[in-house]
Image (tube, rainbow, N blue to C red; front, side):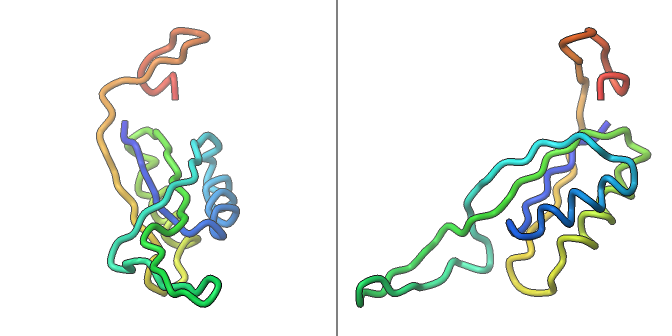
Length: 112
């Protein structure tokens, strides 16, 4: 099993969700986060004063999948989240040792 963590632009969430649904992935956790990378934030002017906004709003999507579904999910996320501009985000893939569904106490891939 693997966990995919994708950090994307907020306005791309629905497109990513639909792309994942199309390939049969329905469960995910979505969190509003803030951060920056190479983008380094941007400057804004408020009441005549310029200030830097370092942390930009992003969305973090987390999905745990069977190994054979990972490549398809990554492709769907990248295809639907990409704008071609700086700040599109990142996708991370991590190994998952085990999963337990609390309600039924199923473990492993059955729990996902």
